[in-house]
Image (tube, rainbow, N blue to C red; front, side):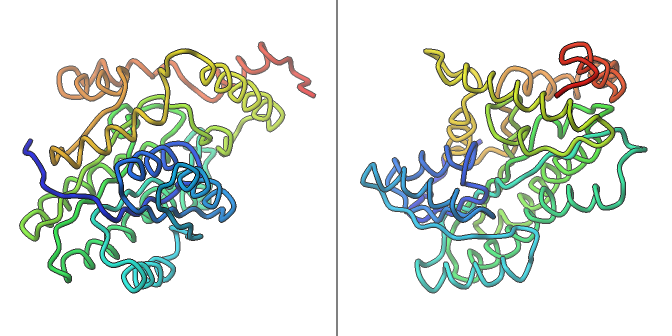
Length: 296
């Protein structure tokens, strides 16, 4: 750990239309940064920009499909031409594909890895090269997950994608540090975001998935009304800022993430057994018990 001297005047955040990305964009904007807000949903990106501008801060919105390397290349050129070289890139865009391994089709794996892993690869490549070629110090922050070091029997594709993001970050940290570019991986635990609402659950009755998503939305709404914020996306945004300030390699967020991080090192067998009882059959059974077999 060391004190970093980067002053983030220009920050790019992907998947910033909601959740962790929005919280991160807002935090940097409040610190005085100009923020380039990207999302595959242009309207969501514009909503985040509106929140930032309502506070008298600076931000612009751009639609970006992180799975398209050509879109990344064009986006990097446009940012450079219009705003200069970013001091910080936050690769946050991600989706969740869950399901038993034998139920997942090749297209499920492709969808998961294209967004969560290759989207990060393309971002690091486009802006990492720009930072280095311009001779400017910078920092790349990749949002991974506690799933990167806590295996489960029902999220193999998601866990592999996030473990890949963590390892990519650690490899790039070694490679880019001599060139003046820092790299950090943030590994959140359970955070109040929309990722579950838009998740793909393979092998589960779609009606139960819909009811489960409705229940998740109610829990999220309740959490937002609490006087404290135990699952706030801003916890991750603060971790992003801390990772840059102290040039941290891996930053778990929330107790369960720290527990998984240490258990992987101290007792990996116990770490695996903690989630072993999970299965799609049991999730289906619990869903039927809670919502009934004929979920409307």
